[in-house]
Amino acid sequence: MSAKKIKTVETEVSVADFIGSFVDNAQKEADSYRLIELMSAWTGHPPKMWGPSIIGFGHYHYQYASGHEGDMPVIAFSPRKAAISLYVYAPTEESKKLLEDLGNFTMGKSCIYVKKLADINLTTLERLAKASIAWIEATYPSKT
Image (cartoon, rainbow, N blue to C red; front, side, top):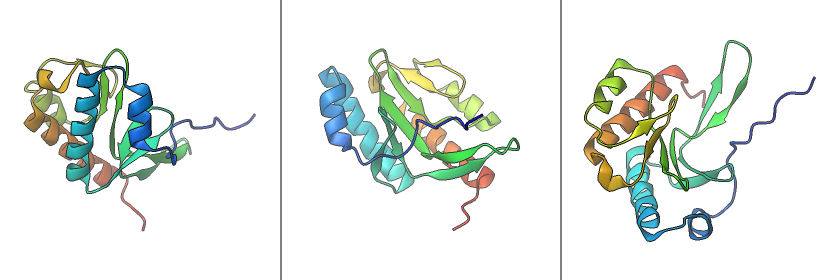
């Protein structure tokens, strides 16, 4: 039995080229560049493409008790057709509480979906992102 290949890996694709070819409207393009500005500031890392459609900032290495391991961006987003997917959520009580003040969004297992940035409170988004960064740093400490 072969190991499952992870699709979400850092690539050398240009973030600007991806946005130019993938994003289908001016509002989502403007929101994408605003998220790049914000997430770069919050993490101190430049944007990098992860897989075919995720823009990530920083990276960490994880390993589960099962032995499965890999690398992921610390925080990220994807300007998908239906909504912008925000990967900024950590499974903490603080994060659950912050969601109450975020604004208009829907949520998957660990992903927040917004139609446009104007629908959410960016100060709350920053607090969610920073809580997620702290959780990742505590849960998966860097070995470098």
